[in-house]
Length: 115
Length: 109
Figure 1 (tube, rainbow over the protein chains, first blue to last red):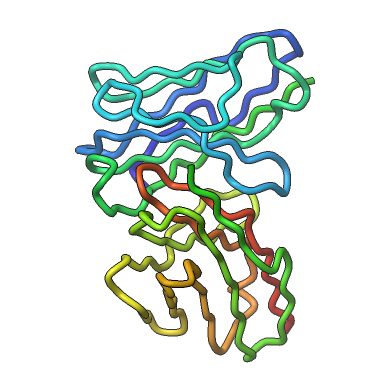
Figure 2 (spheres, chains in turn red, orange; figure 1 turned 30 degrees about the vertical axis):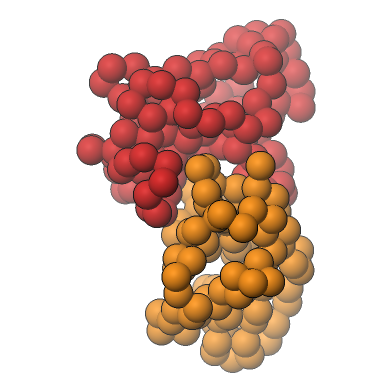
């Protein structure tokens, strides 16, 4: 157990629907990062939050949004889902600010299947 | 933003041989370079990392080298074993972590 908790583990939904993925960081970690990994693809950075505030944005579609709550858990909202959104979604957490050199601890991921 | 390129995309070696995976990065301000191993359907796990003030780091059969001038870093696995078979990702970090596309390593017994 990495200490980073992601729920649900699996999600199957239809095109056009909206889903919410949840991530609870390790105790004490303030930063949460979201990544998308499509089949046989690398990890595409979506967005980072630090202590409730958006800190960095990657290739995140406008249909996707995220937030980090006061208890530091984060949610990734995916709307108007398309078949191509099917992927593994990982979150990772780190202790501190972006300038600190900490390796990520990844959660186990949420496998989203859009049918 | 940072762009990380990783080669090769697939690598097949015989058990006991060495494997080398190379990455280049674009942002000279990147200061942290981790490597992750991902087994099928599982989360990426950090196996070794190197900071920009270090040229080489070893941990048993795994080593990483960094050439800041050339902006490239490499993962070296010696005496490979079948359980080393996985996808390996390099990454470079300045403000956020950008990953290479991954290398699928297969170690044949």
